[in-house]
Image 1 (cartoon, helix red, strand yellow):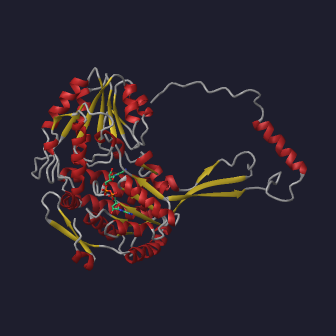
Image 2 (cartoon, helix red, strand yellow; image 1 turned 90 degrees about the horizontal axis):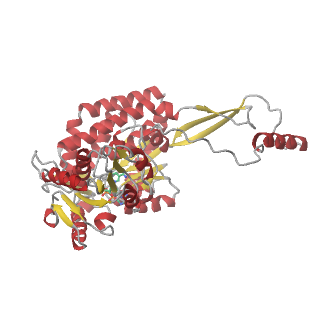
Image 3 (cartoon, protein in one colour; image 1 turned 90 degrees about the vertical axis):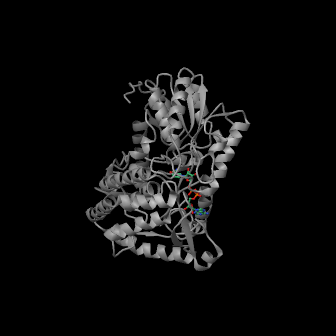
Length: 510
Ligand code: NAD
């Protein structure tokens, strides 16, 4: 992707295939005025879309799903051209997005529609209703690494919740964003419910300032902080889905072969450019040698190149190559060893898979997001040590545990938004589970019921069913009423003369 002086004048930029540098598209650099115009159009569309009966909205989303499904090979081609990933990986992210679209379409009404809730004792004369209303217009800012799956995690849930969306795809994948909006327009031709604005950080920043009702940002932690600062100017709420430094833990009783397979796929697929990819591995000393030897064997079978047999594609963002090289160099300079790949693995466009051992925990290969096909593997004496090292990071996106007996217990002790037990990255493919992180990995949730609610506001409605015996919300309330209320509250809540007994611990059925 390049922006030349000529393109600035013409307000366009070129997108290049990262595998060979070929120009694969030219797109507009949308200005602040363009973004504001798109948001103004979206306002009208949002009014129409949110007022549609649920069944009709659901029907349009179902039609869109059919369009995506029938043309997924075409979309995969666009992904392949713009970011270089193998066709099969592009297909994988598309099918996962389609599954999310199906789930959100099916569940939006149940999750967001009116629910009667308890009015409590003092307001027993009231009927209490909770429902979730669309926010209006949602701005979605996406990254390039999963240019379909990642932004669609926000786009789908925002649309299903009844919002219009203005989507700013990464400057490395504007064609994917445009393709998605064009395909939606086929099922909603008269109303711009999903629009795309293309460009760089300035276009994203303009979207943050455009008066949208929420910004859903996915990208690096550094940019997330800028997005939040910009949104603060207008008190625009944000979801931040940022980077990670996910660990995989291998217990002494784990299926070592399966754990090694998961570590290699989790670390190397998409050439390691996965926010929830495995970057660190902590292995119990009793199975360390067996695990490492299996990881080495499996990694040696992998290759980054352009041919169809190559399982890894190029590094999409040229500036990332320098970061990957710096992390490997730092690990080696601090006494680490490369058992596969290493310093020579880093080329101009491709990085060959690299497995590092004996890397000190303060090395950048352990502390910073590498975003390349690298793994650090460390031997630990106990799973307590593994959990402690896993949690010694400012990130907290995903994690993986391989353990036969203690998987759930270990998963709960890890400070991360998501954890898979005895498989890798599965949580992202389960539409009913929320997706998001803690700490420097961001906040807010996409996917699942939480993801639908993220793009709504909670609306509380109290309807009086009959006149209360004691009216609390009136100046006519007298001292006698106050005294009766105090008696009632004392009777209900003041009875325990000692601390309440804690409930007995039930059996963990998980
Ligand atoms: P990035 O932060 O460079 O860019 C993300 C998007 O933000 C792009 O569309 C970019 O144009 C836009 N942008 C840049 N500056 C902006 C500004 N000042 N205001 C508004 N928008 C601005 O990230 P990237 O390189 O595209 O993506 C890789 C990063 O994304 C990695 O850190 C990865 O871990 C993270 N990521 C996170 C998730 C998740 O769900 N947590 C998913 C995928 C990727």
